[in-house]
Length: 180
Image (tube, rainbow, N blue to C red):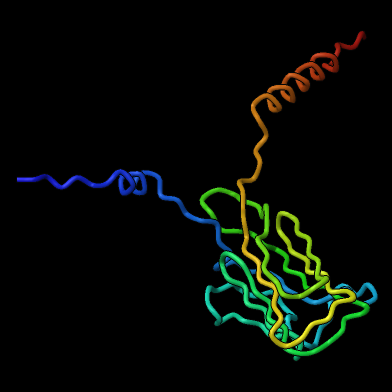
């Protein structure tokens, strides 16, 4: 009789299950801003934060300009009309707090787009798409996948140095008895 032995991969998954960082279930803010320095353009859509759901059920539309679909591991903007954006505006995604077993931050974006001249920038918890002097048309898109990395923790040597500095400070500034 042959014994059934679980595979090494199965054992590893049971001992240390890997959970990918995701935005699914996270409340994020997405908005348009930037024309002549305006922080947020309201009344056209994307007026309030929303909860991210995988799939198309949380797709948001901004006026007749574009749709935004954010999923747990990325987002896509589909442009809907012809326009030349001379003054430019920005599409902003903020409060990107990824759910994971330990804290993570946004460390990179993998981008695919057919819009020429479009630029983007990101921080550990936000993405900004810069649309200035850009031609857009129906069928154009910007798609990005998130890459995350663990939040850097202070190393033991830094903590030890800070502790020793505090001890040296405390020793030189300890209270002295007063003469009376």
